[in-house]
Length: 142
Image 1 (spheres, rainbow, N blue to C red):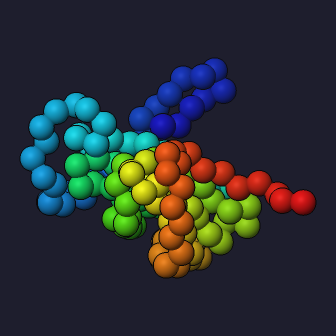
Image 2 (cartoon, rainbow, N blue to C red):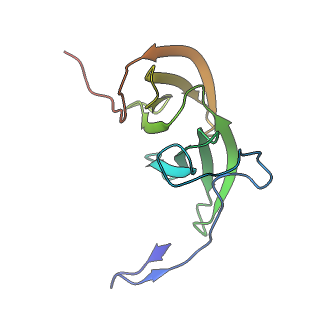
C-alpha cells in the first residue's frame, strides 16, 4: 500500500506468498500447522526487501520479496523451505548480514541464514534446538 499524509491507503499490488504450483498436502482443517499461514513479517532497514515466514502443512518457508523503490510494488525473489515445522519467528541481525528463523516444533529448531546483497537467504547450516521457541530477536550482549 501507499499512504498519503491524511492517512488514506492506495493498493499498489498483491502477491502470493506461496508460489503457484508449489506442492502442498491436502488441507484438512484450521488447527495450527494444518493450513498454511503467515507468521512473521520483517522489512530490511533500507526498505528494499521483505521477509515473510509461512508455516503449516508442509509450507514452512521464508518468502523473500524485493520492493521496487519507485513504485513500491513487490516481487517474489525467493521461496526457501526451512528445516523445521511450524516456522514462527524471523529476525535480521543488526548488520543485516544474517537472519534467524525459529520453529515451534517438538525440537524447537532455530536456523541461521546468511543474507546476500540481493536480499536472498542462504542456509549457514547452523541449527540449534530451543523447544517451545516461537519468536526471535537480536540483542547486544555485554
